[in-house]
Length: 217
Image (cartoon, rainbow, N blue to C red):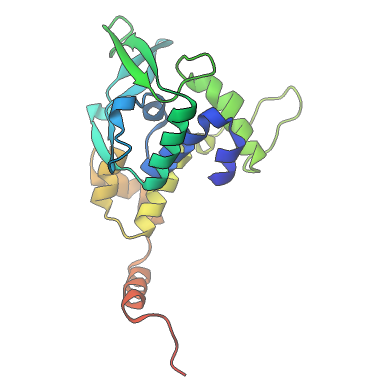
C-alpha cells in the first residue's frame, strides 16, 4: 500500500491512509467531511458517501443507510492532519439522496485540483491505475491503450487489506463487520473467512505471547 500511496499525487495520498487504515469505501472516502473526524480523538464517524445517480453526484448515507464509528489510528489521524493543513476542507453543495433532493453542504476533506468533488471515474483512471502501475501491481499499457479492467484493481482492495490486518491480529468477525459497515457478521465471514488465521496458528501465537519463543539450551 505504501508504494501505491507514494505514487499518487500528494493531494490524494491520504485517501489511501483512510481506506487501508479505517476500511472506508471509495464513496465514503470521497464524501468524508471535516466534522466527521476528531483528530485529537480516537474515532472516525462515517455518515456520508458521494454516489452517482443517473450521472448526477449526490450526498447519501453510507451503503445500507448504516452510519458507523471506526477506530482512528494515530497514523491515519496524522496523515489527515497534514493533508488538511496542505489542502483545507472545501464546502461542497450537492443534492441529498437523489438528483432532485435538497442541496446539502459538506466541508469535504478530499477535493480535486479545482476545489470540486473527486470524480470517481476520473480518479480511478487517471490517478489510481497509474499509481498501481507505478507500484508494479498492474502492467503499464501500450501507448494509446487503456489499463486492464478488473474489480480487484479498484480502491476496494484497501478494504480487503484493512480486514486482513484486523483478522490476522485476532479481531473478532463481529467487530470487523461493524467497522466495515456490513449488514451482518455472516456476510463478513463469507467474504473474509479465508483471511483468518487458523485456530492452530492463533493458539500458537497466544501461547508464544505468554511463554516466549526462546528454545531451551
